[in-house]
Image 1 (cartoon, helix red, strand yellow):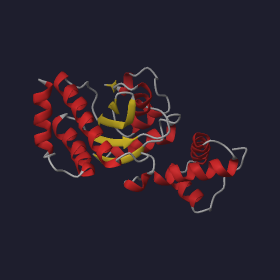
Image 2 (cartoon, helix red, strand yellow):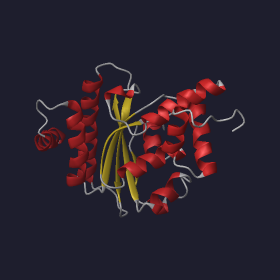
Image 3 (cartoon, one colour):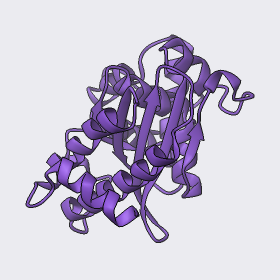
Length: 233
């Protein structure tokens, strides 16, 4: 049954002979069409010690980029948990989540997002990235939708691996990642303060929260040398 469903999805994607990144983009669009979700993103993972460092490959849906930005800013959420655990994380109603993601949930709800479903993109124990889906209304994926989501995650994984060709996934020259400047700024802060890249990201995140400045804006100022974070904060 799953083989038949996979062939059907590949047919809808017109996958044969497709450019890998074009196929990833079509996976995101097909998620909206087939899974009754409001948005979808595919990201590649970063350092194993910092699962929130994910580079956005493509998004579909108005709130998808906002949700990705929220995950990067607060460093938690279903996407981060999916990368860490290697299994799907299904939050059918964020409002009833019992405070599992205290930083992520209020921002998601404020953006009108009520349900999030995250699927790791992996081959065996190797996790390449994550497929994130969201809805503006609460509600679980049906059994068929869940099967199709898992198959689309598998197809996206194969496309990413084909495109990476063995390259470092966080060498983001191969994609137009809107958060590339955050990764670059994290490295700059790490060198300036003598800390890890993960700690550099935490310092940038803390400055963003404390000064109520968007994370990407703080990162751009750091990269342009208009801002240098102090060792104490």
